[in-house]
Image (cartoon, rainbow, N blue to C red; front, side, top):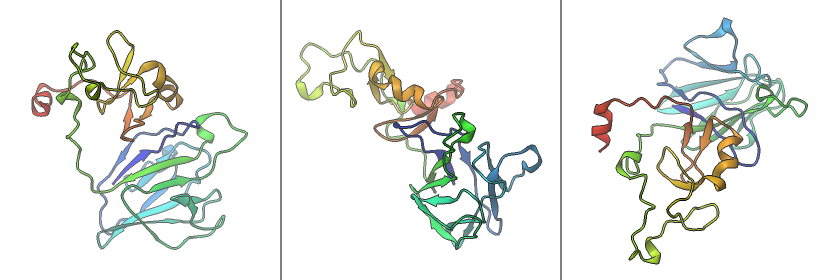
Length: 220
């Protein structure tokens, strides 16, 4: 199970570290607001004030993963549908790969990130995608020979103008390329969290760039 920030391009989002967890059968994982006193291995915590201390529960059963609200005041939403009224325990709901979960709602009077709802994108049993690995492509693929046909010209998916030499570009960790001027609002909207506009892959732009030589050779 991977829980990834579901960052948007229209509004600022609450950004958290990716949670990557192998769920154990028979273990119920409590979801809630972070504090030093409840940093346990069976607890998934978020530093947002709109999340209740004991907000929801996750568990796996017969190869499926389930979620329920356990009486939170601000609500748990699965694919934008609230699971139960305030302070009521909800029935279990199965969650699947690609589902979105939201814990709480934005507090309109609070401008700090800690007053934003936690929006999560769920990844279940996914294998690391290597088909479009950044090491298999060159950062200078936009340098086009003079005999390049129109069909071979790469375009920025935001402005739809060609990517050409001497332009300021942004190469995402997934290796998709954009004009930096076009992508700049998205880059800084939820920095350091970044979601590629093309493939929706999520990345931490402050993550370490140290890579072992063996990893590079394997990618090549």
